[in-house]
Picture (cartoon, helix red, strand yellow):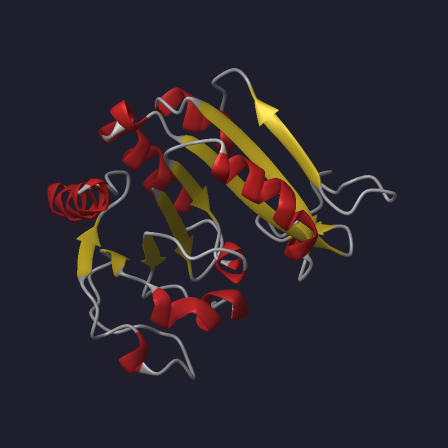
Length: 203
């Protein structure tokens, strides 16, 4: 089973959604993967330099987390993941890590990935996208894969229309939507939806 969690912008709760799914369905013994793309010395997930770049002679970097921590990959272990990895690649060059990523996917029965761009390489069994109508930023990678989402988790900000420009409503309005309110991203409705997908995959 491959689950992918993405979002239209940075820092809107994707890691919390992944951790929530792991915690709720920890009997699945998840392998979790966080993917970060960087460029020009700036980490694309934090919008500031963070030292996540691979060495110049390497096309990407992969590290495994072994202890729960405040880092995103450490949070996955704290939630109950069996293994947790952090994969970093230059922006637009995730394909360099394709073989390594497939080895991780083939070595585990259930994998959950925090990323949008991983959809360039894989077709997940379930793709959830987190939306925040109050956030105007919309990453190009998110827009490219918006129509592939199976459902949207919409952060409850008390507004019912997004502030985005140039994003066709039809790309997301016809799919299942679940209102979530931080810090509780995995509501009963979301859990039931995820469970239905997990169950149908097993069947």
